[in-house]
Image 1 (tube, rainbow, N blue to C red):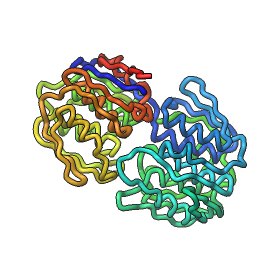
Image 2 (image 1 turned 180 degrees about the vertical axis):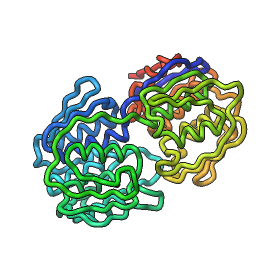
Image 3 (image 1 turned 90 degrees about the vertical axis):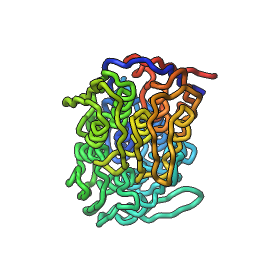
Length: 421
């Protein structure tokens, strides 16, 4: 099993490129089940989550070819309708095949999903939405079987924690091949959903209201293939920014979309960061004093993303003062706090809130990654910690960061991947 070793304290300098969006890629991959003919996806990240979803699609009759960072997909066998447990259990996002599989093949049988272990993340809103547009649902032996036919209707997808991103994608994709018009209220507004809508329209779908909370989908008979370029990964960009600030280094994050990160930029500037925003770049200019502690509350887009909460916590361990981080999307998403404490961080948790007292020094130690974003926070902490930090279970980080150690090496970090056999 691999681990990542970081020897902290090295100054960072230069440019680091952001890969294509993981969270944007997964629903577009699943959309290949809807399409007749090949789709060509450029700037596709080579990640474990991407490879795992491709394996599921292969089982469902979708052929694929890689050409560098370009992926070509085409549904060849349209008779298979079961996504098995041994593949779906590897990540929660794989449940997003349910809607398109049902819409195109008339029936879908998908195992309940697995994924990161930071609290209960139900799929009830997915099923509620699919039932509202004509789906009939059965639960047998850990599988969901979806029958009937998408016929349109009015759907409200809001929940206790806000809109559901994957639930929006599932219902949205199914509705594109419906026999009527679907009104999807309280739809997620994340850039990844907006990009999915534009991709589907390029394939012949009729979706309006893109970027807003109400999506209107007029069903069509068929969708055709197209060429598409993945949007940049805003979470990866935010992760690198947090690392640059922790080291107070002159680092430019390239090939990103600053407009997708305005909530993050706002909090970083409130902490005292000097950030220069370009058309597709964000540069951190070193400052003369410590960052100051600021409070953050995670919210659905365009609010501060839950997927950057752990990285921001790592940043606040080095800030001057006391910060409060409130998690309103996944209230249990604080497993990384205990591992940051092993490095000397001063963190106290109270329910869905973490209170961080900044310290001038972290110390290297062995730590264990518990999920994708937690692993990124531990790598960032290792960059500034005195001595060596070993991050174990790095298969988590490979789910969402493409060759993170190589990218950090290129801007000066002393970091390496070690295989223990």
